[in-house]
Image (cartoon, rainbow, N blue to C red):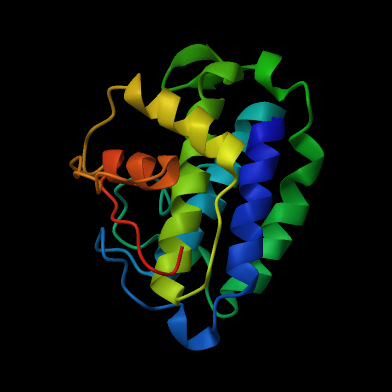
Length: 189
């Protein structure tokens, strides 16, 4: 949960710095806009919260591959993100990993899905920063953890990871991780 909190905090910091005219900017790696990515990450936070608390959350607009997750962040997307973050904070405490939730018809220990939420948030922090022209430095401890997790997880599908790219020979770990996940490092990061 600490890794998830760090990733979510970093995402929130980037979201707070997105200029108002950049919310509908397209991302180079998908058909989504900056607003869509914010809606997707917000959906993920609410989904994890629902699983952790046993609450009902039937929203599908933000799930991976959805065509328009931005509908979850209308208007002032940064304010919407802050409200959702605050509204779900109470259910996302340190014992979440040990909880069991009914996911896709089966009981799942949440510790097994948390790495995907950390990876998703960290990589989408990069996506939002790049599309919005906001400088960002990803948490290096999380980069190492996410890179190791991504290499061991068979999720190479368009709605998860893009095709692997070849990083420059002298690339650092962040650039190598991003390339592995189908993203090019931009001069902003």
